Length: 112
Image (tube, rainbow, N blue to C red; front, top):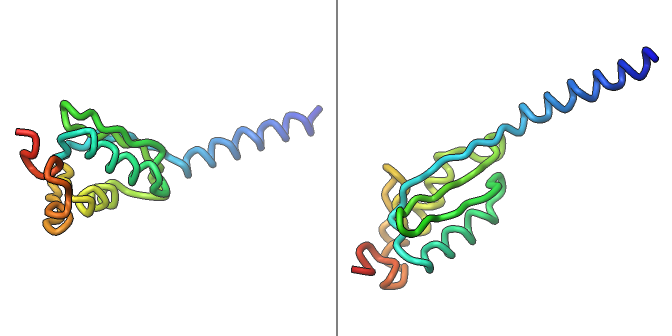
């Protein structure tokens, strides 16, 4: 009986420790993305980036929701990836060359 209690205690402690190592955070990043092409570009890149659990852009609000594992990637790196795709990410401005390489509809004010 003692062995069973010890095994369950070890499993519980081990599981708690593993979850602490895999802390997941969710953030909302305001972008300059304006259309469904932007949405696809951002989501395709971010959803296949190690450490990101999911990314979803709400086109009307231009807000990108990202859930990520803090041990594998950080918010600064996520914003850098968005910038390198040609989009603003909160206070991080879009990489100018990447922004100019975007299709006309994805350029700033491309839909106005």
